[in-house]
Length: 311
Image (cartoon, rainbow, N blue to C red; front, top):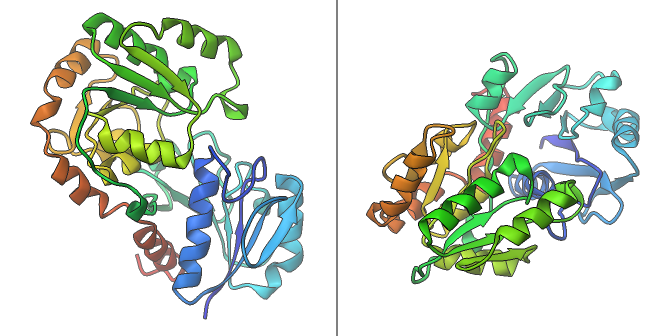
């Protein structure tokens, strides 16, 4: 039985009560490792929920505590942004999951997409993230399109809103407006733009997310930074919801162009508009079929293969 020590980011609890993709995925990894018969301990912030939990007040504190107890484990998985475990010599095989803008670890690095793997020099493993696809549903499609992500400039919310104001089609704008959105003026500016057929919703619960995705005609997101993983794309696929994005990071690796959605050239607004009008050509059933790859069970299996050098 493999004994695994998992170290999570510490800004918010693991799993998160609301927004927090990396923390949610960390939780999925922990329960998935346990389901595979591994012994798992999680180091995470106060308020986190897991059977074997060590609480930490900061990422540095988490690294210190990992160093103190690592001798009891076969593998350490560092998912902190600063890769604090690398600051200490634990003497144990250490793997680090590296998202874009994270610090790379000094052990073996695991990347959530080929785009991030390439950006960091092309060494280590590529393991795509996975979610609990069973909680999502596909229902009758309504007329509205959906933007669902953090309300921040790097997510391209303003671009999506401007496109839909121009073409006069219904759009709902939902997503995190709290701690991780940073730019309060930007959020207010986006809200002011959301008039007519554009509805600003803002923060939503998981139940609301499932409902919005289950009825949306398509999910539209146009990231301005190299998008590491696009968890919401996996959620959309599991909901039978087609996706429109452009080529900037992982979207091209998750969306099958012409089958589960469309990928435009980065910055090509006219192409995005064309794909919006063509969205009904996409088969919702193919989206659901594609989502079967993006499960946390498959993600866990791929991590275990990396730990045992079987990839």
